[in-house]
Image 1 (cartoon, one colour):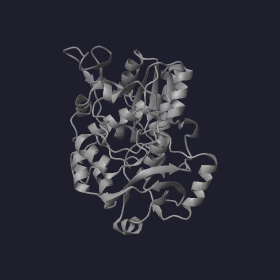
Image 2: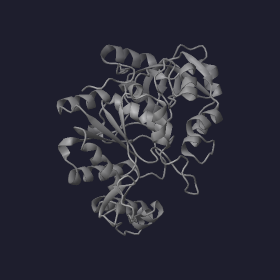
Image 3: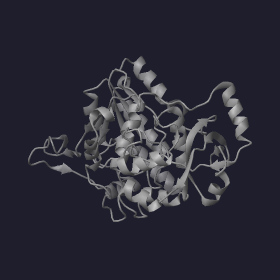
Image 4: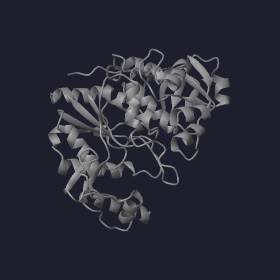
Length: 391
């Protein structure tokens, strides 16, 4: 079964051949806007169709509809703003421009933006609507506060891909993942979103899901993340080691999800599902506290299962990808295996290690219980922490 992209068509805004060469030459004569790291990630995802049906950065109509209705103007579910922010000074310069060039923070020209809309950015409103808080310690809110006071919207035309130095063989676009699934004759594919090393409970969830479908796409987010998240190259070593030793390799594809993390909890869960639908997946795993984060005191910003409950606001047909809702899973000493609240016996004996305790164990070189994380993964994390301490 070939799953239809969101909106019915996989967007392609990447120029080729002579048209690409002409656009690149033209961009050198245009007013230039710099993109933040997050905006570069969004630009690439727009161009390759990962955020279909968007063809560019949001106009005011779609932005307002996204905030207030969790939908685009055309009615399609959409929960995360995809925007290009600008300063007041930049706004005054581009008001009369029909096109501007877009560059990364190092000065590389990447695309042309057809300016169709310029509108104000109410930062507090966006924070409260998307993140449910205006607390500046929330990483998503902090990101919003760093943005400009205005947005510029319009269709983009990419003539140069963002420069990547790592994981080059695993940066598969939606057309490429779809081709892989077709070649493998997978009619059903479940996607797993992660920004952390995969521990035993996550391994359990993915394997439970794999029992019911043809293939598994492990799709780690490798765009901008919090400074205290595990570095991308360390996580990648964990993923490849785990797949090599503990998964059926012929039924797993490991590929990069080039998005930046928003930490928007429920709204981001819906967006992650829609993006994976564009990559050709038929199913998507949403576990406890998907895309969430904690306050400085350690309490979560979102309820444990809010990221699952938000899907009840949409019909399965309009979301278009089946959601696997998994409860919190843990190792039970009594039964000797990993269980969830649905399968645990009445007198279960959970083996739990807090995140703080786990990080302390890894920092001191102490191996965590193998029921929590695979020893091979723990060794990679311990060595990475040692290297970080040396640096």
